[in-house]
Length: 513
Ligand code: NOJ
Image (cartoon, rainbow, N blue to C red; front, side):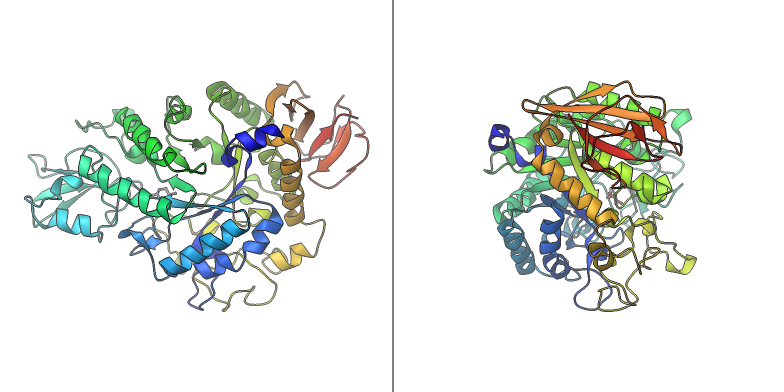
């Protein structure tokens, strides 16, 4: 227990990601808001998470639903106000919940006053805050980089008035900032200070690996042509930027932190973004985190890779779902698998990040062509959270901005709260077990040799030992493991001596007998 007092909260805590549009609406516009989050803080403490990460709440034209920021220091009226945020933060802190904001430093909205000014003239004082280049001799874009969305579009848009192209690794409405410019760094440092001074506990940093770019802007090698540059860009200058941001955040008291989204297809190693403990506090190892299939060998390789690349000093993160891809309940294909995965997520060595609604076992919503909202095709995982049964599911209206996820009549907070065997109660029990067991929250991890089709690991702290067994197959598997079942993904045999056979798609936590 002594480590609890000395180690920062983000090493043993669990973070819960909220997509504010979809969490809970209170003003009846069909879009979730800060008041909806504030009104459910008791639910989140009951569940047992330690921190909230709010996807962007800043002023935005919402071309990418907040990942296109027009004012980093104000709250979009759709979500509420700065005063409303201060209240949410104070009430969260009052319950011991930390709050992380989602900071989007790679690009702004094209409506941000910085870009409006930059675009106004080649001689604008802010021209070099963004990446402007002349056309090629044939009038085409400066290089062949592709944008992330819409798929297959160039990462450059021509500005006819000033006869140059600007770079955007995402939508044309999301121009990339030029982080080589010290004025950009200074402006963004002021943004971080603004929120840190208000008391936020840190930031999830959007596409952090894209900040530094090769100034020569070379074309992709031919075999990578057409792949969005956002998932290929890996330039060493990013690390200098991160060291500077880290110093700024660490100057604040109270374990403020940065967790970076690193979404690279061909990364040398995602763990490089921790630096030598002088860059990001935590790093998302995407896309492996959200794409590893339901397969024992794939997970064994993944855990072994994370252990080897992180070592003792770089604390890993674990994620199964977020707002950018299919929910893992849909990806893995069954409730039993989602339950076993939850138990694994909450017992691996590292900080787990939950995506709101996974504790209910939500699947992606089916989106009809006329219901599509996202230019990146990610609406399914962003469906509103059903809080109750009945046509409105606890929202003020039955027709929020996206359709409800499947089975919302039974897969909702109210119904699952009333059912001790529900997914919701499994998450709660796993979160509470993790909190109460130093081996699970902070211990070392050793991979063991289980039977084919299983993943077996041991977590050890100075005073505790727990073994986790996961069956990735749809058949029972006999093992020679012994001990007392402290938690089972299907609830079977808890409190009793383990009989030795794992049920199909079952995960269990064993304590020494
Ligand atoms: C990653 C975010 O998670 C995603 O939702 C967004 O579209 C892109 N970055 C661009 O900001």
